[in-house]
Image (tube, rainbow, N blue to C red; front, top):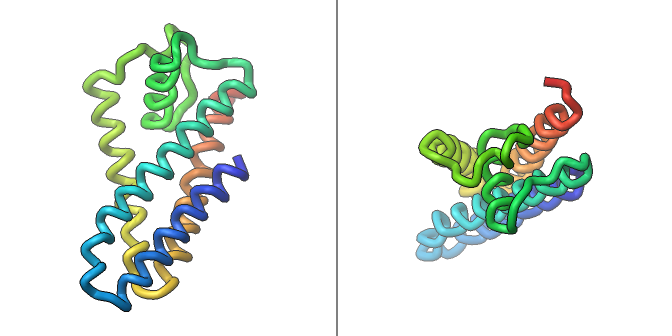
Length: 149
């Protein structure tokens, strides 16, 4: 959990630092939305891997092939809960799962907006918010895995 939190904080801080550097060359500010999107995808990937690792450590891995396990962990990430153990939480996200995924990615992107702030303030804020969000996710999933619902 701590490693994933440090990694997402590093991704946020690096993106924030890069965004800060763009203020010294204003034409390069056009790349900021792309960087925020990349940060969102990288952070989400780290958190999905964290979900998988937590389930493996607690002896409750998703079932099926790699694609089915990945889909189950993605669904778990979008709901911010552990797998419930029944049929691997389904192989498909479905309409509700896709809505939750869009909401989650939208929320993550909104938290990354401070990254565009000038100088290193954006880096500090993005790193801190990424770390806090990852720790909160891990805490929720661990609570579910330990049966503390």
